[in-house]
Image 1 (spheres, rainbow, N blue to C red):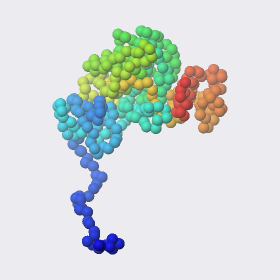
Image 2 (image 1 turned 120 degrees about the horizontal axis):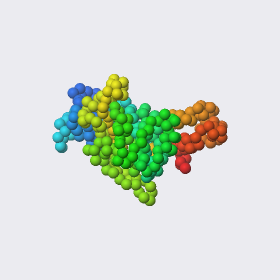
Image 3 (image 1 turned 180 degrees about the horizontal axis):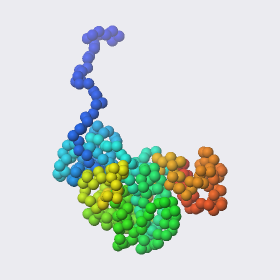
Image 4 (image 1 turned 90 degrees about the vertical axis):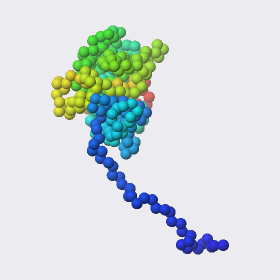
Length: 352
């Protein structure tokens, strides 16, 4: 029996070598790739607009785990005919000009990109049925300013309640607003949407899908009703989708809108726009926004906050200047409460 403590060359087994081709991180440049605009995402499939036709694509493995969202400008190769059953590949995501993000809640470290390359955030809020939520508006304003988007407040169902209370609160802040009603004229809203790529966000039941169907009849977005018990709407739009307004769906119209954002085209010369409808949300987490940036959405409190001591949490007590301004009646108590709720929620305290 061979002594296992002594070995010779007969005991050595050499593993067969693999191919001689060296591994490399070099990626193909895909110089012949065609540009496209992502209009919808569904379970790993991306509906992209290439020239004037929709093309379904999948993400190339070389892109790894990076996300692709509605609004992305991408480069595609493969079958770009758009025929049923064909599949192209997304090989590159171009640099984004803006990113709208949210988290599940204010303590969730994972941020989710909702939409890319938009330049306006339309905050859709019903004046009644369901009742308006100023705290939701404030959250959306924080997200808009963080993303570099211009906010627009769209107040729906004006036939059920007057817009005055919300207008009196937000118009002094320089926030643009527009009022709509059932079977009303949407020309004012259309004017705000022309020349821009706009994202529509709002709680379920506020009439967002109804607006989209009126603006783009061929969209046929599902419309739900408000629950009579909870006062909340039911989610009807389950995924984001980009739709053209006032122009045919082609990449030429999109290129002009993107150029307008960079100043290369005068918005006044454009007669079209694009909207991105998003699913109804009941919360808008802001864990990705730095506390010091939250005050940007509260310009009416900025002067008071500037008097706070260094490191101030802006919560009650601790020498916060907001306490003094409240006592003197120099700031709106509801606005201070909303501001402080946002900050407290970031620390893990539930909003009351």
